[in-house]
Amino acid sequence: MDPFKLPKELLHEVIIRTIELDNLSNQIIRISFGLDLDWEPEENSAVLLNAKEIKRFTDFFLDNLGASSRADLLSDIVDDIIKKDQKEFKPCKDFKNKLIKFYKIRNIFAHNLYPKGLDGYTKLDSAVPHWIELNNRHKELYEELKTFLYQLL
Image (cartoon, rainbow, N blue to C red; front, side, top):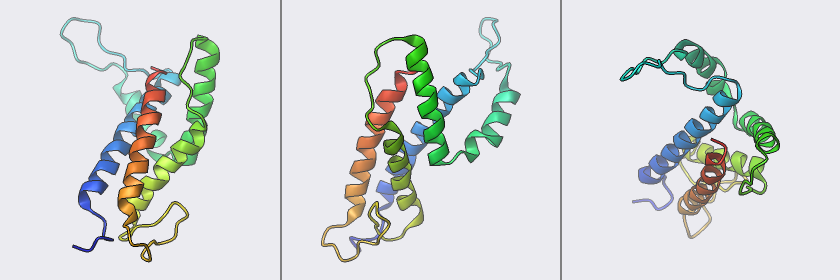
């Protein structure tokens, strides 16, 4: 096996982490726009009352939100929540840049056959494949961002 070709297992890990962080950040964004899940109040009912509004918001807004715009919006929401709730949050230093870097690594995995560094240059001259290094960095960012964002729910 070519050590520089993208291992599918690593791609799978990166995609799963990205989907999970997208879902978490989408939930925070929906709540901030007043579109929290609104269930039928009857017992044993699983009817989502605002499903149409949530689907429309997701389809036309959240699904088209790029990394930089998502980072800007989440940063603004984080500032509002911290000011409004006045409770202690474990900070995430440089949150916006970490979120952008998280998506940048995802894009490297999704759009390249050979490893690239965060600078965008192919790393074929290296003795060590950069896929593992990038996957580890993505995992670290995921854990830090996830921990920080869960505080906001």
